[in-house]
Image 1 (cartoon, helix red, strand yellow):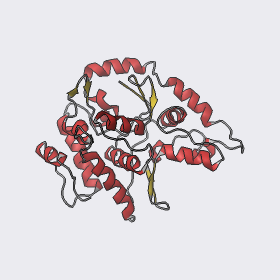
Image 2 (tube, rainbow, N blue to C red):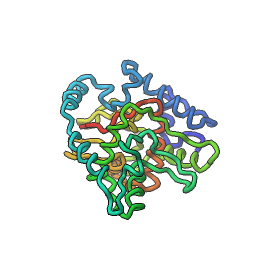
Image 3 (cartoon, rainbow, N blue to C red):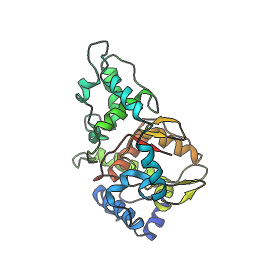
Length: 278
């Protein structure tokens, strides 16, 4: 797609973000970032990696206190054990991703050989199955422990998702994720952009919606609501349920493309996962 589709475009234009008909991903990202900088002028650009806590000073104080003894700490420890656990064939995840798994800045990425977006969770399971092991479940459980360990070791790496210009399929995947972000769906007729762009910072019941800029930086997340860790695709599914829309399959093409777009929009920020959220 060469322009934002859906009625969300009208609102974004009125709020000062313009998408040219001929705009590409680079122009999209510049406009996306500028929109949030203008909407929240008191928030330093690099701080958007902290999600809703970048715009709520009071909530940030509580969050920083939680971060002194983070609820994901045990997940990092157990994730490290599993990461270095020897498979039946004598290998481990370390053989696929290196000694410390600090590869978060490599994902999501475009795989030109297969013509698809590959996320870190998908790559982990492909490593598992390639070595004769059963794949992990994608929404919660062991996958979040492994990615918590890998993300923790990747903290400080810059988000730098690439869309190869020599492969039109990569651009098509990006555009599909972009379309998903701006398209209304479900019985409540909401788009991702309605909550995390047009009304970012507003209250929905007792929750303040977080800025979309920075959404790809801090996963996996321990949510107080879940009382457990969860992946980004678990959160995607929860958002769909909240607006009474049928969720897609975790690590299916729809959510992988959405992650591709969302994370590309956060280019220039730094990865700081795992995270803790309400």
